[in-house]
Image (cartoon, rainbow, N blue to C red; front, side):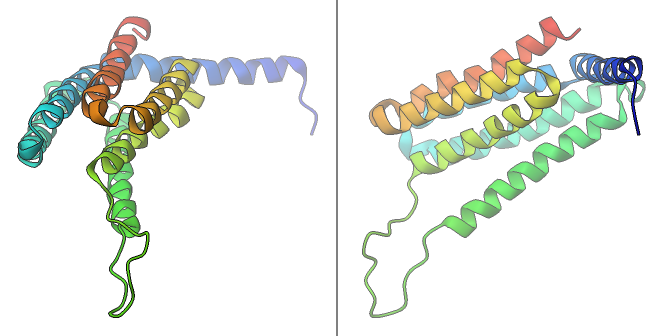
Length: 199
């Protein structure tokens, strides 16, 4: 089946039109507010983990609860008329992605060897490894989503992934404050970018 140059151009224009409409729908929805909100949660959570490590578990439990309630609030604040069919899918995507992330963590967690066998080099995952993993999961989503929504998210996701590895390997004593700035900051930057550039 031969396609003329004109038909190919029309198809590309249609695709670009869909991308633009998707961007505008996201920008006028709750996505930018949620990204900024979760960025602030990451800043507080990682900073608290750096300076009050004994209370980090309780802090994150409280922050995640606030985050879930806040996300629900932002979603409900939009009237039904301003919600598109994609908003539910976007929310479901993030829930599914993090459900898989926690599943992978459980599967990768080192298990004790049978009685009589030594652990050898196997050690339980430490908090820094888990934090680095849970930071790079949304960055993976940024990179993949950026293939459809624009290069900004590809570059931002790749940059934060590299910065996470730099902090993990070269700044272990400052890792959590590093992640407050880079991880939390990336969510805030993404929210502001959507708000400014996609409307």
